Image 1 (cartoon, rainbow, N blue to C red):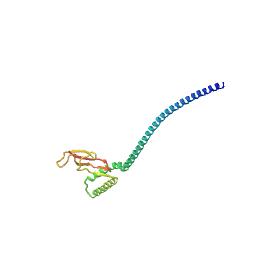
Image 2: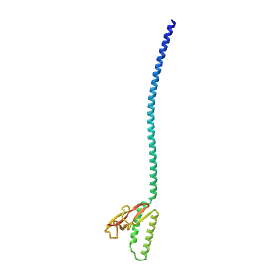
Image 3: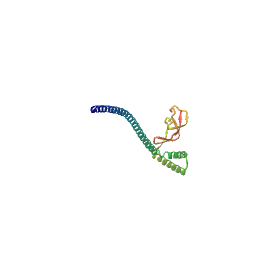
Image 4: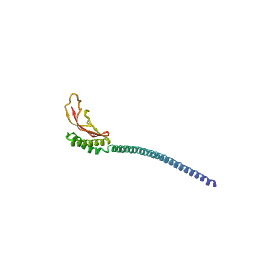
Length: 192
């Protein structure tokens, strides 16, 4: 009887072992499947993170370039401000210079008048020198071809045989440049 009691125990143990083994195999398969799913999820997450990182890198490069462009633009604006700082003052002084020129065009008689005229010439000369020291130059386009970037036509006259079409034949009001910029276009009469 002892043998009979022992045999089923061994059978039962075998069955239990087989069931445990089956459970372990199933559990291992589930773990492997879960692991594969996790790997896929991890790979997807890594890919997404790499894309986000690439986008952020691109944003950094673009923002860095934008900052450099802003610095360059700011530097150019500062240089222009320094270069053309006297433009406003010159615009106010030019009519005074025009009036001095008109006053000097008047014929005078007598020593007192001549002395006064010489004084006005000296003032005019001083103003012209002060403007020149700021890079402001007179433009006298007489005989040149009309250019709307530098001249303003106020009238036209019939051209003669020795004149070219749109040649400036008279300067009504002088023009002025400040460095490389037109401060005031010359008012001219052209031949047509």
